[in-house]
Structures are given as structure tokens and as C-alpha cells.
Length: 551
Image (tube, rainbow, N blue to C red; front, side):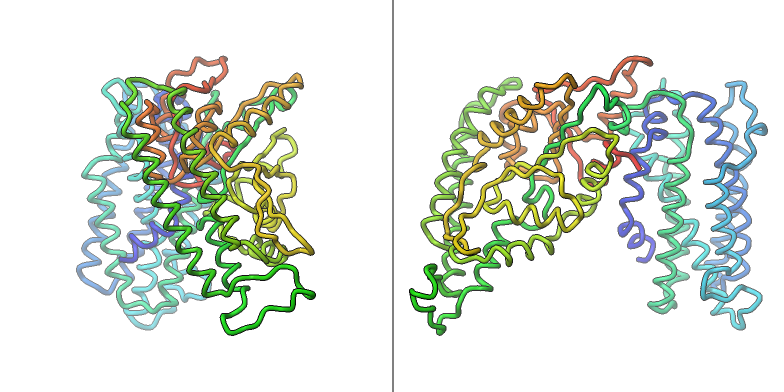
């Protein structure tokens, strides 16, 4: 269905809205009353606009059922307008004094009314349309510009519902937008949108999607524009004075940043560039690096991959076979990961001895790095951190990747040249890999040693460090826990099983920020504690970006 597809395609905007200072303050119940009153008064402007837009859409709808539903939706909006002041009832607040719309409000309401009037680029207005069928397009476009408002409010209400209690200052607002009644209005609007879109062409559906996306971005900008006259837990970068503080960012690379593990990329390069079985190798005098055929390489890679998976699962089972810790047991976890470290070393040695990495050209590797697909928002986050000279931030990548050149070229392609890469290196002869690996970061223990070594060097200055580590796998666990803020991205089952076995707790980042905001004492500093046994979970880089940098 069109409405659900549109919403799914643009989830980033909803996440950004969730992580705004305004929503976190509202959700914690600490938002100042005057800020909430201004917000509610601005919302009145939206409702008035929607009532007018529904009326215009009703005139354009050629389907009787759709027209009846639009009439009902307009009645809902008019009814809501009458009762909107109940959010601030008993607070001695006069919403009529807050009637002037701010620029972000005006931008969205003008957009909705322009769409309802048929003033979409390349589309005729209602007065110029010759047939009822053509008018239906304007009705469909109008609902595409309005549905995101309802969907986003329902999303915010649902996310805040878990922090709502009988004493919450803004309980009425949260209750309304998380209610079944509001959900029913949303579903009815989306149902009408879907019905109106059935007869449209692919090009017209693309217009609908663009309108939906634009509306969602304007609604996001509306929440970003809301005034918050208080200290907030986010964005993190705004809490630290660069003269006194240094932000230290650490990140894993494989699957934390990348969609595909780098070993699979290197394997593919090796297979694609290897000679075919029927091709003769160059004479020894011309090349001192003799390569396996592509068929033999593929078979060898499959064996190595299978052996790695089987041994990793066996090691994990051995770790979990020991008695589960009653509380957070960092030393026990560290000993367990030392066992896993020995396995990682054995696996790397098998790769070296197999000669599968022999003969890879450094230029092929760099080109692959430039084309490497990263998770949505990852490159943008590191660009923001690296390009902000006022931030006083150091960025380090700690990775098991066999070839640091792959990582360097990946980030260099995004214009990031100040990032510090800590990974293994290929040994080359005349730009060709010998098949050997210069081992620098092979294990969880190696990562921890690199992490602590970097911090030890940075502690020699008079600045205070705040460390943030972002990772996705078992190999990141020790660094995640040693950092002031450890952020787990993705859903690695092995990481969760082993960490939980040793008493580590996983807390979704957003409710954790709500809790920290709620407990904050105005004028004090937001504190983060390393080795607390708590790791924060996110599902996307948009959450990381919103929390640390903001938008």
C-alpha cells in the first residue's frame, strides 16, 4: 500500500524528530510550560490548515466512499480544534496570545494549501482539470501532504507512551497521540490515500511520494525549530567546551559501518582478478607471485569461511557453558574473550597459509574501497564530526580488517582524511600482496590495547576526554564497556548472548536519554560512566548522528 511504503522509505526523518531536544524534554516531563504552550498553539495552525485542505480535497475526489471519508476526517479536525486547549487546561495559559505562526509552521501550512490548490509543479490546478479523474490526482496529492503529520504524531506518541505515567506533566498529549482513537484517524486517512492512488500512473505515484517526503521533512523541521530554554542531554557535542574537553570517537568498521564484511570484499577481488583454470601463469622471471586459479580460490574461500563459522560457534558454546554471572562481571568477560582471541589468531593464520590473499593489486583494493557500500548515514556522521573544526574531536577506527588500505580509501572517497585507522595491513611486493598480513589488530584484546593506548597518549594534555565507542560484534565488547558511552548498532545474537552471560545490560538509547533528561538537575553536567555494565542500542546511524551531532 502506498501510505505504508512511503512511511517506510523515509524513516530517517522520524528518527531525527524523535531525537530532538524538544521531544526528549517533552518526553521527560521537564519541558518548560511556556515552550509547550507555544507548541500547542502552533499546532492549532496546522489543524486550521488541514480543515481547509480537506475541504478542497473533498471537491476533487471522484470516489463517493473517499469523499465521505474525507468529510469525516474534516469533522474530526474541527472537533479537535474545539478541544485543543485542554492540553494546557488549569495552567493559566492563554493560547490566543500564542497565535502567530513561526516560520517553520508557515512553511508547512503553505505547502499543504498549495498542494490542495493544485499548485504542484507540473500539475494543473482544480480549475484547469477537465475530468473528475484528473481532479482525483489533486485529492491524492493533498492527502500525501497531510498523512505524514498524522503518522509522525502517532509515532512520537507511541515512542513516548512507555515513559508516560499518572504524574507526567504532559500526559494528556502523550495519551492522545498514542490512543486507539488517534490511530483510527490515521488509518482512515491512509486508507483514503491508498484508494485515491490505485488508478494513478507510476509517474503520478512518484509525485505523491515526493510530496509525502517533503511534508515529512517540513514536519521534522517544525519540531527542530521548537524553542527549548533549558539544558538538554542532546546533542552531545553541544555540551562540551572545546577549550576544556575533547570528544574521542571510536568505531568498528566491518558491519558497523559496512553492509558487507570486508573479508567477503577481499575474497571477491581475489576471485575476480585471479586467472581462470585454463590460463597459464606468467613465467617465474616475469612474476614472483604465482596465484591460484579463480575456481581453486573460490573453493578455498568456502572452506575457510565454513571453518571460521564452525569454530566461532564452538568457542561461543564453550563460553556460555560456564555458569552465568549474577551481576556485571567484567573480568570474567575479559578472560572469556581471551579464549576467543586465540581462535581469531588461528583463523587468520589459516588465511595466510592458504595463499588466498596472494597477488591482490593495491589499486584494485583501493578502487573497491571507494565503491564500498556503507550503512545509510554512516559516512554523513563521520563527515560531520571530521569537518567541524570547533568540535575538537578525534576519530579512530579499530578494525579486524586484513587491509587498512580498503578502509582508508572508503573514507577518503567521502572526503574524510583526518580519521585514524587502526587495522591490519597487507604486505606488498611491487603493489601486489604477498599473501601475508602485518598483524596489528586481530582480537578483542588487541582492540582494547589499541583503545587504551590511544587514550593514554591523549591524557598527556590538560583536556578532559569523553569517549564514545560504536560497534556491532563480540570483538567490540571490551571497548564498548571501557568507553564512557558504548553504542551497539545492529542485532548480533552472539554479542548479546555473551554479554548478557556476564551481566551486561542493553538499553535502547532513546528511553535512556529520556531517563537521563528526567533526572538532570539544571546547572549540573550530564555524566556518563564507563564500566557500568550498560550498553546503549540503536538501529541506525541516524540515531547516532541525532544524539551526538544533532541536525
